[in-house]
Length: 266
Image (cartoon, rainbow, N blue to C red; front, side):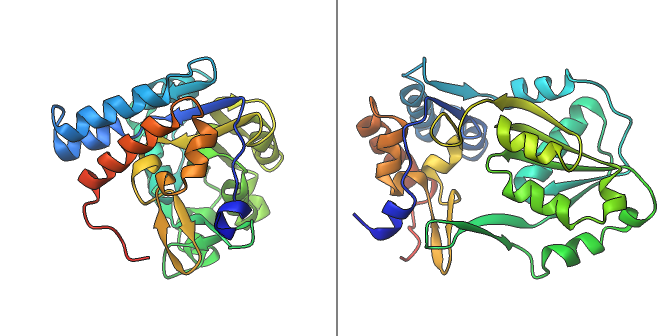
Protein backbone atom coordinates (compact mmCIF):
# COMPACT_ATOMS: atom_id res chain seq x y z
CA UNK A 1 0.00 0.00 0.00
CA UNK A 2 1.31 3.47 -0.89
CA UNK A 3 2.58 5.65 1.95
CA UNK A 4 0.19 8.46 1.08
CA UNK A 5 -2.78 6.10 1.35
CA UNK A 6 -1.64 4.88 4.77
CA UNK A 7 -1.14 8.47 5.96
CA UNK A 8 -4.66 9.43 4.93
CA UNK A 9 -6.48 6.23 5.86
CA UNK A 10 -10.23 6.54 6.40
CA UNK A 11 -12.17 4.60 9.05
CA UNK A 12 -15.71 3.35 8.44
CA UNK A 13 -17.86 6.07 10.00
CA UNK A 14 -20.97 5.15 11.95
CA UNK A 15 -22.82 7.76 9.90
CA UNK A 16 -21.80 8.93 6.42
CA UNK A 17 -23.55 11.84 4.75
CA UNK A 18 -23.28 12.00 0.95
CA UNK A 19 -24.28 15.30 -0.62
CA UNK A 20 -25.79 14.69 -4.06
CA UNK A 21 -24.17 17.36 -6.20
CA UNK A 22 -23.71 14.78 -8.96
CA UNK A 23 -27.20 14.22 -10.38
CA UNK A 24 -27.79 17.81 -11.51
CA UNK A 25 -24.23 18.20 -12.78
CA UNK A 26 -24.47 15.11 -14.98
CA UNK A 27 -27.97 15.98 -16.19
CA UNK A 28 -26.88 19.49 -17.20
CA UNK A 29 -23.72 18.31 -18.89
CA UNK A 30 -24.85 15.08 -20.54
CA UNK A 31 -28.66 15.13 -20.50
CA UNK A 32 -31.19 13.73 -18.07
CA UNK A 33 -31.62 10.50 -20.03
CA UNK A 34 -27.99 10.03 -21.02
CA UNK A 35 -25.89 6.93 -20.21
CA UNK A 36 -23.93 9.11 -17.77
CA UNK A 37 -27.12 10.14 -15.95
CA UNK A 38 -28.22 6.52 -15.69
CA UNK A 39 -24.81 5.56 -14.28
CA UNK A 40 -25.02 8.41 -11.77
CA UNK A 41 -28.43 7.16 -10.66
CA UNK A 42 -27.08 3.62 -10.24
CA UNK A 43 -24.05 4.91 -8.34
CA UNK A 44 -26.16 6.86 -5.86
CA UNK A 45 -28.42 3.85 -5.35
CA UNK A 46 -25.39 1.68 -4.56
CA UNK A 47 -23.94 4.32 -2.24
CA UNK A 48 -27.21 4.57 -0.29
CA UNK A 49 -27.79 0.84 0.03
CA UNK A 50 -26.69 0.80 3.69
CA UNK A 51 -29.57 3.11 4.57
CA UNK A 52 -29.10 2.72 8.31
CA UNK A 53 -25.58 4.18 8.03
CA UNK A 54 -25.40 6.21 4.80
CA UNK A 55 -27.65 9.23 4.29
CA UNK A 56 -28.03 11.04 0.95
CA UNK A 57 -28.49 14.79 1.25
CA UNK A 58 -30.05 17.00 -1.40
CA UNK A 59 -29.31 20.66 -1.92
CA UNK A 60 -32.96 21.63 -1.51
CA UNK A 61 -33.45 20.01 1.90
CA UNK A 62 -30.27 21.59 3.27
CA UNK A 63 -31.22 25.04 2.02
CA UNK A 64 -34.64 24.71 3.64
CA UNK A 65 -33.02 23.68 6.93
CA UNK A 66 -30.89 26.84 6.87
CA UNK A 67 -33.81 29.10 6.00
CA UNK A 68 -36.03 27.53 8.69
CA UNK A 69 -33.66 28.72 11.42
CA UNK A 70 -34.66 32.34 11.03
CA UNK A 71 -34.82 35.26 8.63
CA UNK A 72 -32.03 37.80 8.14
CA UNK A 73 -31.93 41.28 6.72
CA UNK A 74 -29.85 41.38 3.54
CA UNK A 75 -26.15 41.42 4.35
CA UNK A 76 -24.05 44.20 2.83
CA UNK A 77 -21.77 41.57 1.39
CA UNK A 78 -21.36 37.80 1.47
CA UNK A 79 -18.01 36.08 1.09
CA UNK A 80 -18.28 32.69 -0.59
CA UNK A 81 -15.38 30.40 0.21
CA UNK A 82 -14.31 28.90 -3.10
CA UNK A 83 -16.67 28.08 -5.94
CA UNK A 84 -18.75 25.85 -3.67
CA UNK A 85 -19.29 28.59 -1.10
CA UNK A 86 -20.22 31.07 -3.78
CA UNK A 87 -22.79 28.64 -5.24
CA UNK A 88 -24.29 28.11 -1.78
CA UNK A 89 -24.54 31.87 -1.27
CA UNK A 90 -26.22 32.27 -4.66
CA UNK A 91 -28.68 29.48 -3.92
CA UNK A 92 -29.55 30.88 -0.49
CA UNK A 93 -30.02 34.31 -2.00
CA UNK A 94 -32.41 32.93 -4.61
CA UNK A 95 -34.42 31.33 -1.82
CA UNK A 96 -34.25 33.99 0.91
CA UNK A 97 -32.79 37.21 -0.53
CA UNK A 98 -30.02 37.48 2.06
CA UNK A 99 -26.95 37.98 -0.13
CA UNK A 100 -27.41 40.62 -2.85
CA UNK A 101 -23.65 41.13 -3.17
CA UNK A 102 -21.44 38.04 -3.23
CA UNK A 103 -17.66 37.99 -3.45
CA UNK A 104 -15.56 34.86 -3.73
CA UNK A 105 -12.28 34.09 -2.00
CA UNK A 106 -10.19 31.27 -3.40
CA UNK A 107 -9.12 28.94 -0.62
CA UNK A 108 -8.95 25.17 -0.37
CA UNK A 109 -7.48 22.37 1.70
CA UNK A 110 -4.53 20.40 0.37
CA UNK A 111 -2.78 17.28 1.63
CA UNK A 112 0.71 18.08 2.85
CA UNK A 113 2.01 14.54 2.19
CA UNK A 114 2.70 13.88 5.89
CA UNK A 115 -0.79 12.92 6.99
CA UNK A 116 -1.96 16.48 7.56
CA UNK A 117 -3.49 19.32 5.59
CA UNK A 118 -2.78 22.94 4.92
CA UNK A 119 -4.71 25.70 3.22
CA UNK A 120 -3.69 27.13 -0.11
CA UNK A 121 -4.97 30.05 -2.12
CA UNK A 122 -6.46 29.11 -5.49
CA UNK A 123 -5.91 32.70 -6.64
CA UNK A 124 -2.71 34.59 -7.40
CA UNK A 125 -3.24 36.63 -4.21
CA UNK A 126 -3.08 35.14 -0.73
CA UNK A 127 -6.15 35.17 1.52
CA UNK A 128 -5.30 38.41 3.34
CA UNK A 129 -4.90 40.27 0.06
CA UNK A 130 -8.15 38.83 -1.29
CA UNK A 131 -10.03 39.98 1.80
CA UNK A 132 -8.42 43.42 1.66
CA UNK A 133 -9.96 43.97 -1.78
CA UNK A 134 -13.50 43.59 -0.44
CA UNK A 135 -14.44 47.23 0.19
CA UNK A 136 -17.34 46.96 2.70
CA UNK A 137 -15.18 45.16 5.25
CA UNK A 138 -14.02 48.51 6.63
CA UNK A 139 -17.22 50.54 6.71
CA UNK A 140 -19.25 48.90 9.49
CA UNK A 141 -21.52 46.96 7.16
CA UNK A 142 -22.86 43.49 7.92
CA UNK A 143 -20.91 40.54 6.55
CA UNK A 144 -21.73 36.90 5.85
CA UNK A 145 -19.17 34.15 5.28
CA UNK A 146 -20.60 31.18 3.41
CA UNK A 147 -19.29 27.67 2.70
CA UNK A 148 -20.88 24.38 1.76
CA UNK A 149 -19.37 22.14 4.47
CA UNK A 150 -17.72 22.72 7.84
CA UNK A 151 -15.86 19.45 8.29
CA UNK A 152 -12.70 20.01 10.33
CA UNK A 153 -13.56 23.72 10.32
CA UNK A 154 -10.06 24.65 9.14
CA UNK A 155 -11.18 26.62 6.09
CA UNK A 156 -14.01 28.57 7.71
CA UNK A 157 -12.01 29.35 10.85
CA UNK A 158 -9.06 30.55 8.78
CA UNK A 159 -11.22 33.02 6.88
CA UNK A 160 -12.86 34.32 10.05
CA UNK A 161 -9.55 34.60 11.90
CA UNK A 162 -8.13 36.61 8.99
CA UNK A 163 -10.82 39.27 9.43
CA UNK A 164 -10.23 42.26 11.69
CA UNK A 165 -11.85 41.76 15.08
CA UNK A 166 -14.27 44.65 14.49
CA UNK A 167 -15.38 43.11 11.21
CA UNK A 168 -15.76 39.65 12.73
CA UNK A 169 -18.03 41.14 15.41
CA UNK A 170 -20.61 41.97 12.70
CA UNK A 171 -20.20 38.73 10.79
CA UNK A 172 -22.40 35.65 10.61
CA UNK A 173 -21.28 32.37 9.06
CA UNK A 174 -23.48 30.00 7.07
CA UNK A 175 -23.01 26.44 5.83
CA UNK A 176 -25.27 23.72 4.50
CA UNK A 177 -23.80 20.90 6.58
CA UNK A 178 -21.05 20.07 9.00
CA UNK A 179 -19.76 18.23 12.04
CA UNK A 180 -21.33 19.63 15.21
CA UNK A 181 -18.03 19.89 17.07
CA UNK A 182 -16.41 21.82 14.22
CA UNK A 183 -19.45 24.08 13.92
CA UNK A 184 -19.17 24.83 17.65
CA UNK A 185 -15.54 25.88 17.15
CA UNK A 186 -16.65 28.32 14.44
CA UNK A 187 -19.41 29.61 16.75
CA UNK A 188 -16.69 30.67 19.19
CA UNK A 189 -15.60 33.20 16.55
CA UNK A 190 -18.99 34.36 15.27
CA UNK A 191 -22.59 33.13 15.07
CA UNK A 192 -23.15 30.38 12.51
CA UNK A 193 -26.21 28.83 10.90
CA UNK A 194 -25.82 25.25 9.66
CA UNK A 195 -28.42 23.23 7.81
CA UNK A 196 -27.25 19.83 9.05
CA UNK A 197 -25.08 19.61 12.17
CA UNK A 198 -24.07 15.99 12.79
CA UNK A 199 -22.85 14.98 16.27
CA UNK A 200 -19.97 12.64 16.90
CA UNK A 201 -16.26 12.27 16.44
CA UNK A 202 -14.83 13.42 13.13
CA UNK A 203 -14.29 10.52 10.68
CA UNK A 204 -15.01 7.76 13.22
CA UNK A 205 -18.60 8.67 14.10
CA UNK A 206 -19.51 11.03 11.28
CA UNK A 207 -18.16 12.01 7.90
CA UNK A 208 -19.33 14.03 4.91
CA UNK A 209 -18.45 13.65 1.24
CA UNK A 210 -19.72 15.12 -2.02
CA UNK A 211 -20.98 12.60 -4.56
CA UNK A 212 -19.21 14.49 -7.36
CA UNK A 213 -15.89 13.81 -5.64
CA UNK A 214 -16.42 10.08 -6.03
CA UNK A 215 -15.97 10.33 -9.79
CA UNK A 216 -14.43 13.74 -10.62
CA UNK A 217 -10.82 14.69 -9.99
CA UNK A 218 -11.71 17.59 -7.72
CA UNK A 219 -11.93 15.84 -4.36
CA UNK A 220 -8.35 15.24 -3.21
CA UNK A 221 -5.78 17.97 -3.66
CA UNK A 222 -2.15 17.00 -3.19
CA UNK A 223 0.93 19.17 -2.93
CA UNK A 224 2.81 19.16 -6.23
CA UNK A 225 0.62 16.46 -7.79
CA UNK A 226 -2.59 16.36 -9.84
CA UNK A 227 -5.85 16.10 -7.88
CA UNK A 228 -7.62 12.77 -7.49
CA UNK A 229 -11.18 11.51 -7.36
CA UNK A 230 -12.19 9.41 -4.37
CA UNK A 231 -12.36 6.24 -6.47
CA UNK A 232 -8.60 6.57 -7.00
CA UNK A 233 -8.23 5.84 -3.30
CA UNK A 234 -10.08 2.48 -3.39
CA UNK A 235 -9.24 1.89 0.28
CA UNK A 236 -11.46 4.86 1.09
CA UNK A 237 -14.32 3.44 -0.98
CA UNK A 238 -14.00 0.12 0.86
CA UNK A 239 -14.09 1.93 4.20
CA UNK A 240 -17.08 4.11 3.34
CA UNK A 241 -19.16 1.47 1.57
CA UNK A 242 -18.01 -1.93 2.85
CA UNK A 243 -21.10 -3.78 1.63
CA UNK A 244 -21.09 -2.32 -1.88
CA UNK A 245 -17.52 -1.17 -2.48
CA UNK A 246 -16.88 -3.33 -5.57
CA UNK A 247 -20.02 -2.08 -7.30
CA UNK A 248 -19.35 1.51 -6.26
CA UNK A 249 -15.79 1.38 -7.62
CA UNK A 250 -16.94 -0.10 -10.93
CA UNK A 251 -19.64 2.53 -11.37
CA UNK A 252 -17.24 5.33 -10.42
CA UNK A 253 -14.71 4.23 -13.01
CA UNK A 254 -17.32 3.90 -15.73
CA UNK A 255 -18.84 7.30 -14.99
CA UNK A 256 -15.44 8.97 -14.73
CA UNK A 257 -14.56 7.63 -18.17
CA UNK A 258 -17.58 9.50 -19.56
CA UNK A 259 -17.04 12.71 -17.62
CA UNK A 260 -13.26 12.89 -17.77
CA UNK A 261 -12.23 10.79 -20.78
CA UNK A 262 -8.66 12.12 -20.79
CA UNK A 263 -6.92 11.20 -17.51
CA UNK A 264 -4.53 13.70 -15.99
CA UNK A 265 -0.83 12.71 -16.07
CA UNK A 266 0.43 11.26 -12.81
